[in-house]
Amino acid sequence: MHSAASIASPVERAANVAYCDGGLCNRLNALIFALILRHQFGRDWQIAWPVNNWCGAAFEALFSIDLPVTTHPLPYFGQFQAEYYFLMHENQCGFRGDRVIDNHSLGSMSAYQSALALDRPILYYNNLLPPFVDLAMLGAGLSQLRVNERIAALAHAFCDERNIDERVIGLHIRKTDFGGSVDDDALHRAVSSDSRRFFVCSDDESVNRRFAALPNCCVFEKRHFPGKLVAKNDWNASTRDSAGRVFPYNITRPGESIVEALIDLLILSRTTPARTSQSTFLGMALIFKAVNY
Image 1 (cartoon, rainbow, N blue to C red):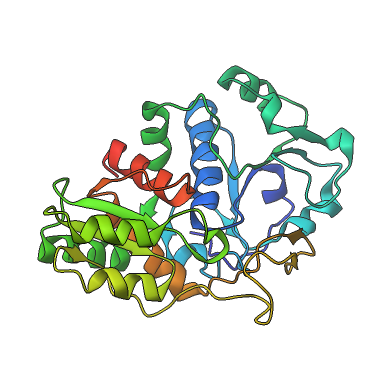
Image 2 (tube, rainbow, N blue to C red; image 1 turned 90 degrees about the vertical axis):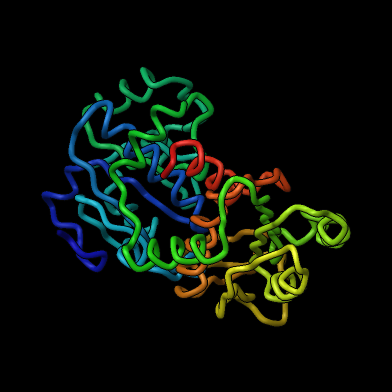
């Protein structure tokens, strides 16, 4: 088994790359579809999982898999532009236009099969799953990925102790750099007058505490939360990350906050999640639930 600290050798550079960046579920979207491609069409693959402000947890702290894993950031692959085709949702590092294929132009599995049949390996990077992916594909992809045993045990223990199952309503309340996307005040009023049981998870400590005080709510007690990458600026200030890319998201997620977020995600997937937002975190919980991951 290769560790996440391993360095890509010339032999490994002949393999396709599942490039996983952004927050936890953006990374899972990229990884799951790469694993679907692996299941459908075979070929050699490796995973690039950089540890950065978007996700401070190494791959092996969260999952295990029978593939080599590196921590190379996206700019690293710029020196190998003649060796890859880059299937990306956006060209974040100014790679050569003749080497980049826009994922949005690939609307079917046969289109991806054609890309895999090109004269060079691909680097696949997409923060969302293609719209044509179905549950059978998702199950095949996720079957190749194993959750860290300690994380799985903590999630299972919480569900057992709190009787978490589909009778419980799951609420994911995304704040920080998406703070205005969910009205947590309205949700709090609704939950406080509801006789049903709720599981609440948020990336904001004060939101967790507020809902945990309600008698019909339970919250997995987290000790680590995201913070601002530049403390003096707003959550949505234009911010340069460690790879030199500029985004309107001023956030840093320490490794332990990602570990605890994955526990939240597993618990949320055991509930009946309410559609509180378009968050990829909520979307991944619904996928986990649908395929009984």
